[in-house]
View (cartoon, helix red, strand yellow):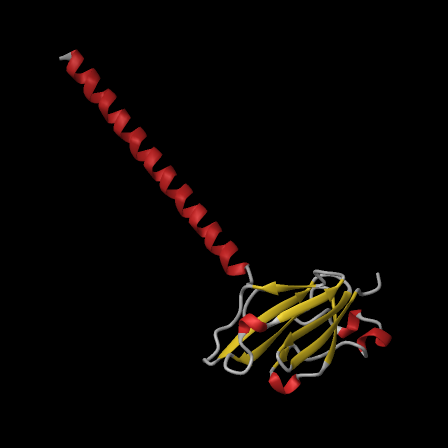
Length: 159
């Protein structure tokens, strides 16, 4: 009988230990889930479909701010324009696939790589297509597609 009493008491303590460990594990998982939700809720997607403007004009000297282009979306009606952006600025264009096939778009920069393609582009209604670029380093670029042309100057902000 003593053996039976001992094992019953021992089993009861083991069951309490398992229950306590389950509760602790449950609270830990719940806490981690809460932390994950809080961190996700606080994050902001800065790579959405809207182009990102350059630094605010409050942080840009007036002599430079007057040179910067304030438009970030272009269409075939904007052909021939000259644009000026700061490094990290984003801009894009929407063109008609029938008039300006995407495969005919050419970007020539001095130095090479002054602007780069951005892959997260908005969906547009065909026959339109969208292309996005980001100013990477100072330089001068020409974007052409048939008779469409944009000239882009990329500048650094003074330190």
